[in-house]
Length: 353
Image 1 (cartoon, rainbow, N blue to C red):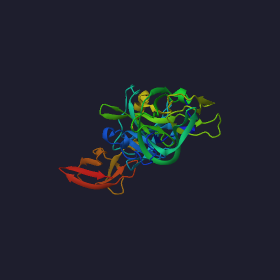
Image 2: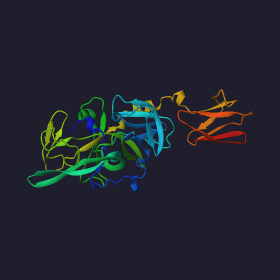
Image 3: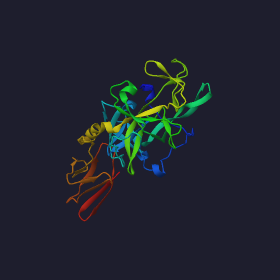
Image 4: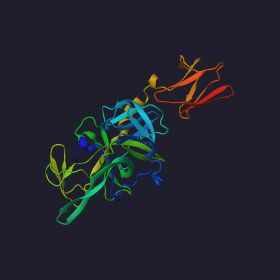
């Protein structure tokens, strides 16, 4: 099993059945409808998942800065704070604004054996990796090819719960969901390659698909010889007959009659729910709270109006109709405009965008 390497912690989806770069680039349908696609947002070259009205979750190692944009369903949200975990490869980011949708979380510790849907961006499937033995040649898998930044989805299953320390050689990784790339796997059986770190793993609980993990790493790199020269990254259904780097040495994997599948790993969310819930329960700073301000003069001074009731989901504000003319503006961490005002039964109704 390959250990954690910074060069190999960013992955994208490679399929067993096809190398078509247009495969699974639209939302899943049928039994996989609502399996996580709509919660995926663009975070630089990677993905993040909306998990609360103002928060998204992604891999810590993909980086980012406060003030960067997170794009969810074509809408830009600026980040206002970050909360990296000290015990795993996760960061929660707070944004200015309200997400229209966000993912439910998988809270049970029974992930092993369950089918999953995984999302990622990045490389296409490359040329076959071929080895030879006494019986002839065989295709072990495929090289990673060109990075294209396209969001894709695939299927796999949780093979086991892996010790992140053993996989990565680090103490700050925690439990990982392991998924092997099998030739006889699911219809959309997939592995990961460069570009998919931060993408999500969803498991189904009853009729609902829930966020269970965030993509972290893959097995590899590999080589045909015991050498650094000529090493390559690949999605392998069989590691037999190849060398794999273990962080210090190149280790030979004997060529056996049965496949020895490569795997990808996702940070196990159920092991870190206390941290997630602690961050999500933090009070919102006053400067990030949306407020209606009013004044007697267009020049101000403007003050927060305590009589206003704001509904950020519908982008409307209700308040008692004032006895004298008033001027209104919005205090917000983003640029908003009041676009209509009308009165009904003594209530003033404002809408904004």
